Image 1: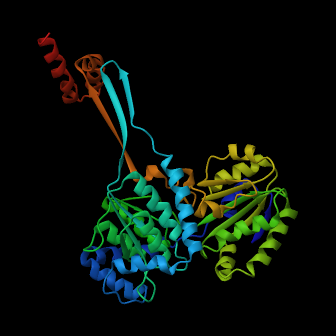
Image 2: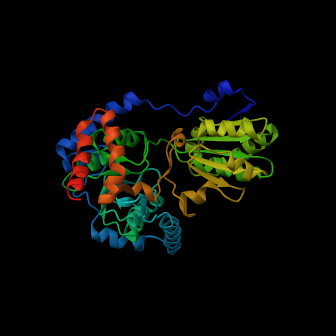
Image 3: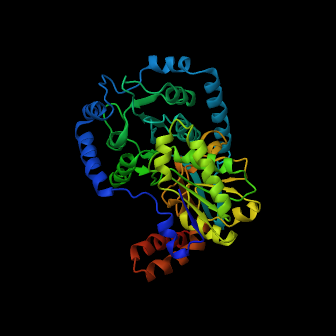
Length: 430
């Protein structure tokens, strides 16, 4: 992990450049998978399970027997932790519910706006190097609160053809019954087109590798929405020497261990502090079970020393991190200056890990700079906002002439006439 001292703004782009996707090569692999799943359905999914997951499946659905057994395979401590995290996530996402908006904009003209659940949603849960049962909470809880009618969860099986019990337990705790043993781009394809086992959905949620990400983006061409474009996980830590170096090192490593293509960035005002953090990273790295993954991720990463708060804010907003930790003395001033970030963690006792698991906020966030124009997953992600309007005779008389003038000047005379015939009818009946 290199240290850059006061780099000029013109070199920022290169300094914090994220790992590059080999998009063309990935798409060449993913496109045929989508075609085959569309054409062959469950047969293609079983074939890909053998090819990619090295398992022969007789059935794609997790049976009720496995769902019942899952709880017995977990420790009481883990089950309690999942339940506590679920409670916090439920509480925060329930608070996001908004009442129906009703407004009489002028006499006789009433407009309404109401949240309506997306009917069919698909949740993709990675289960390879790390079984992300926490993501089941992050996606399943708001889907249930929103009132989505059908929820399907797809996750890859292990070599024994089983899904990790923590994923099954968490899904069952939320009330998700359709759990399908399918991973990768083929899972996204199944939810896009539908198969005998996997229902076609209206929107797909969930993180994944580059192949999953590419498949999700392709799904949008077939009328299926996705939560957001997202890539490998990332964190930017803005810290000064008011924060222990071991805290900062631990935060950087917590994201570096996600995958070899993850990225972590340190922004600070002191080269001495940056060096102290890097030394601490070396110490903590040695004892990590995922040491090799984290070490490769650090090759994509950088520590940047900046002159002052304003330069730090400019750099952070330019980078638009998925996760942003602000741990400096003037933290409130720094927080107010942020306009581009997925989720912000404030103060030296707020590690990014709490948001990943149990604080209540959602950990499904925009990466790769998409925090400039996308929000993280929330309750709103699982609903549509439908608007309504109703006019009384008084209302059409009040607003009708305005519409007539506007429609006529746009040369849309049928639009004008739809108003005119009503106004004329009211005049006749007076």
